[in-house]
Figure 1 (cartoon, rainbow, N blue to C red):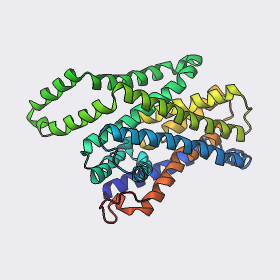
Figure 2: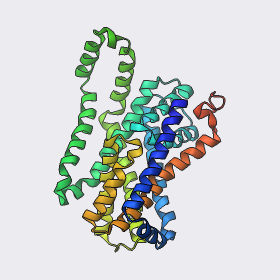
Figure 3: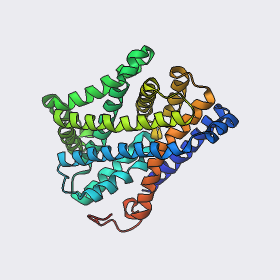
Figure 4: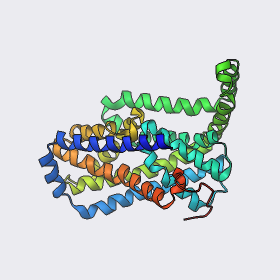
Length: 325
């Protein structure tokens, strides 16, 4: 747990450095002027769009829990674990999110690696959702097609291979013949069984559909932020905003950097100048605002949950508190 806390603090520090770098690269004085001129009454609406995203992603999370046999977890506690996982996104490769599987084990008895399959499915279904949202943009801007195609192929391959059961079981059996891998065999089988369940076609379609609508909400929030910075309104601006944020989300996730820090910000700012022809200072200000409304807003909510229920981090009794709010 102490190691996790160190990694989290490192991620937060890295995030602060990224924000400073983005501000100075965009000319700190000009960025400050853009932020001062922002139509701040639009920010609550943008945050509302983020909350819609979180609400739909929570439905997906709880749907996945039912798939692996943890559906008896009260929805209030399920929500607590879901929000409590937000700060873990700023750990390298989001590896800290596996802690959610540990929490599930404590409260439902579901094996950790089966719960880890849910965390993996969340990330993959989100990836497929944002790729779906960015598909039309890639057609309009073919230079982004190679990265789009590589990400789509990788995600589809993971889902498809998980469903080819004879091949997967054959690989596991072959791994068990190696002494060094034999001790991991049970865990690998548990992870595979969980993955096989959550990636079934129906479950995947439901999850990607929920993910597409939820991430569309954040795209609309980004559009509102651009309007607040004086970017002309219209369907074209809205479509480009959704495309930019969706594609940047993919790049950030693929980078495995904590919270996509650096990769996501660089992609958003770069695409705003290339696709919407915004000045660098405006692009930097828009990037700072959308990352606050999405990543850092979520981290703040998660930290509030940690402060209210310190047992999640082993800072108090770890016995289950079912139904607690």
